[in-house]
Figure 1 (cartoon, one colour):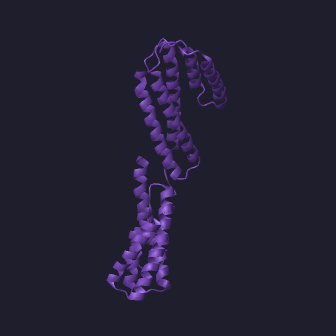
Figure 2 (cartoon, rainbow, N blue to C red):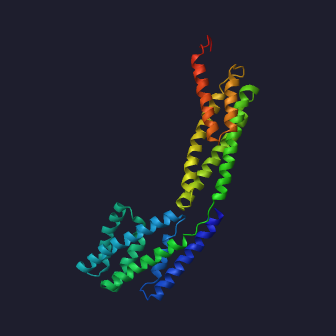
Figure 3 (tube, helix red, strand yellow):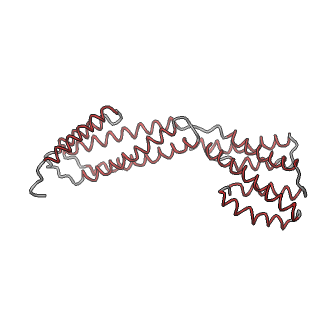
Length: 287
C-alpha cells in the first residue's frame, strides 16, 4: 500500500509533464490540456488506466462530433456550448463514458476559442487526447507487485487451515473446548479477505498468474465457510460421543494432507466409507 501511495503521484506528475513537453514540441495549441488529460487518466491499476483511457478517447471523439456540428450549424456562441452539454451529458451516461465528460468538454471549448473547425484543428485536439492518454498508459505500465506478500499470506492461510482442522479432530477425542479457538477462525477469515483484496489488485494490474491465485483464494473462501459450518457443528457434539474417534482421524488426516491432491482423493474415499457406515447404523433410542 505504501509503494502505491508513493508511486501514483510520481507516475501522475511524470505523465503530465511528458505529455505537455511533447505537445509543445509538436507545436500543438493548448498543450497544457494534454497534461490535464494525462492526470485524469492515471488510475491505481493498469486495467483501470487502459479502460479509462479508451473511454475518454471515445468520449472526445463523440464530443468533437456533437460540438463541431452544433457550432457549425448554429454558430460559435457561448450558449451553443450549453446546448452541446445538454446533448453530450446524457449521451455520455447512456454509453457509460461519463469519465470523459470533463476533459472532452474542455476540448470542445477549444473549438469555441478557435471560432472555426477544420482538419488541422481536429488533428490538434485528437493529438492532445492521444498524447495525454498515451503517457498515462506508459507510466502506469510500472506497477509495484505484491505477489511475494500474497504468496506468504496464502502459505499462512494454508497453515492456519491445517491447524484448525487438526484442532477440530483433537477436540473430538481430547475434550477440548473449540470455543477457545474462535479468534483463530476469525483471524483466518480476515486473512483470506485481505489476500483476495491483494489478488484483485494484482489481477487488475495484469500480472502473470494473478488470475490463478485469485481463483485459488475464492476456493479457500469457500473452504472457510465449510470450516465455520464444521465449527458450529462441533460445538453441539457432546464429549461422550462414542464414534468421535473415526471423525477425528479423518479431520487430522485432512489437516496433514490439505494441499496434496492425491492424498485428499484417498481421504474422500474414507469419508464416503464412513458415511455409508453411519447410514447403516441403527438410530439411537434417545436423543
